[in-house]
Image (cartoon, rainbow, N blue to C red; front, top):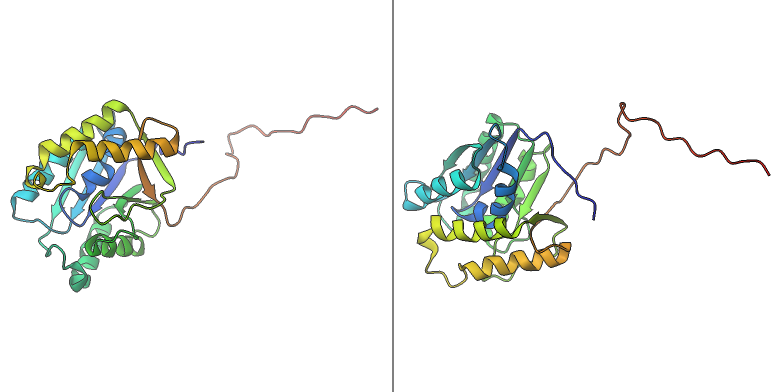
Length: 230
């Protein structure tokens, strides 16, 4: 499978409904993406958990997941599980982020997520970030909404294990959840790896993708071989 790369990334936007959504859905991709990119700007918006222990967890987690890149984090205090009733506030928050930054890549929930908060954010993001590629991450949970993603990011064994370890380290508030376990996170990464012919992977959904198939002006023209007569 031919890979599509983003060699000139300067800015990335991360959006989550709850503290830990981003790390669960894209933690491995962030570890891979940010390694060796000290000049990368990461702008993160989380809609709930503000002024609670969860905001502190999110700050510490994203600082480590995104190291050595710079992280700007905003954590709001919208009510968990009630965000569809606060549609205007969600739209305003996403629009405000877009007004501050023009990212080269956006990570957000995917629109088929069964959690109403995730799904609302997934529906709003592409209406605001219209000119950026948006990778919709998946969040492992009890809802059983794992689907058929089309985009995969290979994770080395070290990265997959580091992601699982950082999730345990930085989100102690979630340790009581029966699905929030190291083997569950590694199990999903192994499944997505099977689908990509690698050991581990993270998977993403893309609703719309623009292609540039024209040859680069700097690339030499390719001519067809001359057929000999006779």
